[in-house]
Image (cartoon, rainbow, N blue to C red; front, side, top):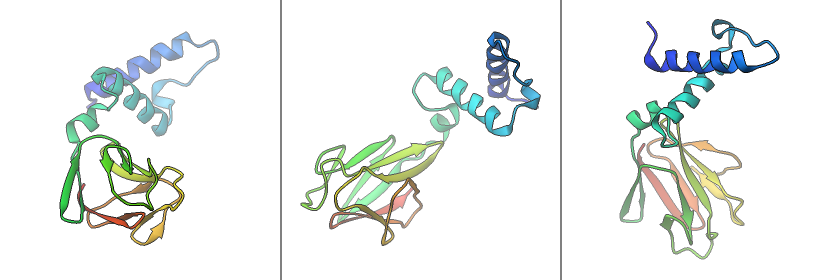
Amino acid sequence: MTSPLDRLAQTAYEAHRDAQTEPLPAWEAATEQEQQAWKAAVSAVATQTGKTISEASRTRPLVIQTGDQRHSFDADFTVGRQGELVIDDEFASGRHARFRLVRGLWYVQDLGSTNGTSLNGLRIHANQLLKKGDKVRIGHTVMVVVSV
C-alpha cells in the first residue's frame, strides 16, 4: 500500500520526467535513493517549513547539559561565544559548532574553529551523529547529551 507521500513523490517525479528532453527511467525503475530524495523534496515543499513531513511529526528535542544548566532545542543551533547557545569560554570561537537536525537525527559539526570540537574525547572533522550520553567538548566546556 502506498502512502500519500509516496503518491505525491511519484507524481512530482513523473512530471519532472515528462518535462525532460532526455529520457529518464520510470518511477518504478528509479533507485531507492532517488525515490527517497523525491519523497524528501515533496515533503519539504508540502510542509513549507524546511523540514520534511516525517521530521515535523517525529522531531524530538535535543537536550544538553552544560554544568548545572539544561538546554532544549527543537531546531538547528550554533554554540560558541556567540550563537543560540552562548558559552563563556575563552577557548571557544564565536561560532564554534553547529548542532543539526537531519531526518529526525541530531548531528554536531565543527565550524572551522581554532581549537576544534571533540565528541567523547575524539576531535571531529565531519558531521557526527549524537546519542544519549555523548560528551561534546568546545574549548574547556563539556556538554552532555541528556536526550535526543
